[in-house]
Amino acid sequence: MDWAKKEVASLELSKKLKELGFPQNEPGWFWYANITNAIYRLIFLEEFNEKINKDMEDYIKAPTCPEMDKWLPLYLEKDTEKGIAFAVEVYGLHLHRTYDNKGWHISYGTLGRCAFTLPNAFAEMLIYLAKYGYIAFNQGDKDNAQSR
Image (cartoon, rainbow, N blue to C red; front, side, top):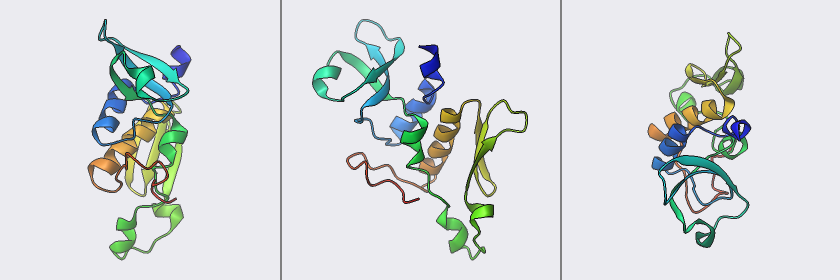
């Protein structure tokens, strides 16, 4: 399943997102470690419930771009609060390939994060935004994402 690893955030970034409160109880891709070994593997769960996951020693949501995209605000309000003239073209969310065409870059004005895969670029930005209080994940309410 090497193709799947390119479609989700890496194990390390997924762990950081979990620590910051990214919802873990949605169906989809998961990094999991079975009780018999501590090696993380990627698995897809069509439905998430405790019965299916009772044999897992540890599981971590491996979010895809669409799952992370709903948490990225269109712009950061900090810019408008500082009296900076707001323009989506300057301060809004931007997503593009890196100059060497080997990765992805996500930014808000001068705040940016890069990664080799698009899901990792999304994860890097979400980690930064959550860590510095720009967004807060709400575990119980998937519809309570940041407005776009």
